[in-house]
Length: 635
Image (cartoon, rainbow, N blue to C red; front, side, top):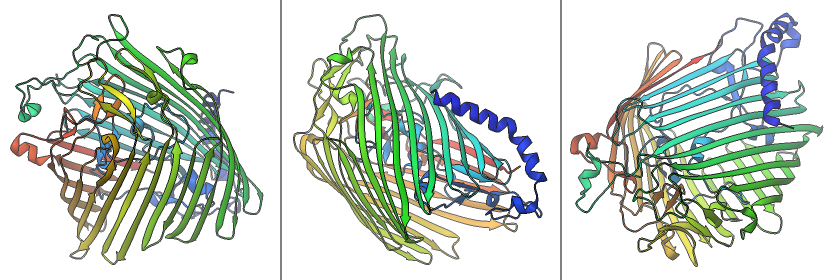
């Protein structure tokens, strides 16, 4: 069955019949229209943020049935870039929409096989899918008009067809101009379009629920390879208006399509059976019309142009049972996951790794919520005859912590790859990780503080590494023959003072690599972030403002470089990212249902003429004035 077409057909019917069913609902008796809500629809209707609520599939899975109101606050509305939203813990290539990678180690989402082409994952799965319950049609449009041709548009629309049936869509575009040798408005570095359709339905007694969504993203980047350097190059030349890019004809594409359906049915009191279906496809390509550029390694393939294309497909079915015993939720499941990896230049049957097959999983969840703010969660999953992941987490008003132990497979691109300039075949062992997090919290009136530490140990870690002495391929995957041990103490503070009109936010993260076999982990020693802001409300709550300054400082370190043809970040010991104080000033305000921000980014570069690097040879965003707004409609 073609599930994307089935879902699209259902969404079409939903929209086609909305007006008919809405009219029918108006003619129903008041007694039949009553349901749990925050407004009484039989009296005067007042639609707004409080009449539109959303929830996630996860809360329904945990039998918590919690919903939230739409976010209309102006606090930190100016933080629109992906680096901002990820707390400066990621690196990109100096521009919105370019390849991104976490600076600090992160556990993978799956313990089984994966493609390994993860440079654009953030643009695909950063936002959690929201499902809505509306009393009137709800729509929101956000437009970011960043300086120097960096624009982002986000649109969401949703409405209830009936009290228990909702549908909607999200639409996001990135149109980002080049920041190195931009020839004028519309000289794009990144073009990206994402959209999804979503629907949720439940019976009136909530015995049956279904969540469904279909998503698609087409992400295109014109690569520049960083700033071109020679023997006479100086630090300030990186930030000169005459700096030239290494590449002008290279392009990468990442196209993803996904279908998701989750259903649950109550069989007895608080016990339900459920089924989850996921089908995903990823197409990844590197294209180059000038493959003789000195930036690249010597060619493996012949031809006047270069092109590497790869396809990865998965289909997962999960069947499980879940229910509550008192306040404890128990869950157990069985899942199958079919996968297929296709390389353009490889005959898959001759590889040392299996590129097509079926994985079998089993696992479960134990969740306990004493009351709001006191939760315990334990989860386990096992890939039969190989990998596993076990984790526990605790959260209280005074303490939060987690412990995870996992063993997972190296990615396909780490195991096998043959392209225009690179090729390798490996039989890497599975990777092992242990991670412990613990934070003590001090929740006081007007003051919130927390201090804790994250401990991570790795064994058989696989990473990409640069070998400058190599005459052919310089960037290759490597499996560490030892261990990596990291500790990261962290302190957070939020202090409201002077009648809560001023807020000071601060965060300090220190990372020490206690053991680092093969120099596989490269992270900054210090990451400091702070914000001082003034906020107030005027005109009987109709005019909110927030203005302030924000600073981020990161110590110098050998940041991971980026290899364009393979789209992989790699460790290196030649280029040190400089320490730098990134300073912004901002002004956010809200009038009625609209929010607006103005931000001046990177003040110091405007004063001293030089900036900093997010990735070696890629200057980070220079000083620029950004502007953006959003507006919500509830009718």
